[in-house]
Length: 364
Ligand code: V47
Image (cartoon, rainbow, N blue to C red; front, side):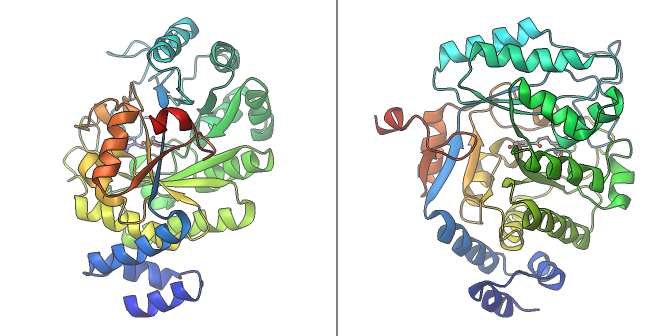
């Protein structure tokens, strides 16, 4: 399948097939691939590049899953570097961030699968944060955590989501999808939910009016076909529910984890995945260049390879930095705007649901 034939399909608005996807991942013509993805990106969003003011909080790094890809998790509370954040500590972090930046719009909350905490710990966490700042949206708990709660606390996925929504959950982050192939999951994350279970959590969330993001972790042991199949499963979920707002390609970081020694994906590989994803996921509105994962330089380039979102100010990021990310741990909104403008794009501050945010301060 040539890129010319794929370009014709795209002009006709036809969804791409598995064979088309393989061709996108195999073509030597990275620039043409980027041009096609950029056409879609500009048709949907013009030159706009979205970002938000967010704060990452990871309640605990204690995790029973022991995923080989992860540098963040600790096996038990007794392991070196293990922690469980008290609700008061999380509230103090939020208050400090709000004092520094009253325009903060979102808390991004994800953590390990800790089997010794009551469900009340998590509901208490959400309601305490929401009480401090009722206007802030809480994007919390990957599908892997929701599925773990369902098993651990003996409630249906729907009941878990309803309980969390009632105390402040607004949105589900896209983590934990990794690669849906059972072969790959067995190799890199055998103890967490499988593809069907991950998809079922998002399907249920969408039915309850909770939107979500989705991700793909690339650069471990997956084949190109497994990447394309992953993207096609996300596209099928979206065709069914329309609840996904953004896709985030996540390049593997190989430091301090059990897959150390695997070479990290190059910038060219990350740009290819970004562009191919933009073209295959024709029904997902946004593609995020998560600068913490990509690195700032590659994230800038990604804005010409299909991505229209730079993620956010982040602050307090741990998962990628423990796995070797060399980016800053946070950026100010001004720094993001400068980096985006330097890439030739127009920064637009957004809220969690892609409404424009802090428009007055952006004009200054
Ligand atoms: O699920 C963990 C990945 C994810 C490593 O929804 C690793 O807006 C690379 O999902 N190398 C968590 N990746 C991050 C995530 C995310 C990030 C930003 C925005 C959003 C969103 C979601 O990070 C995990 C896993 O796939 N991860 N360890 C690693 N060593």
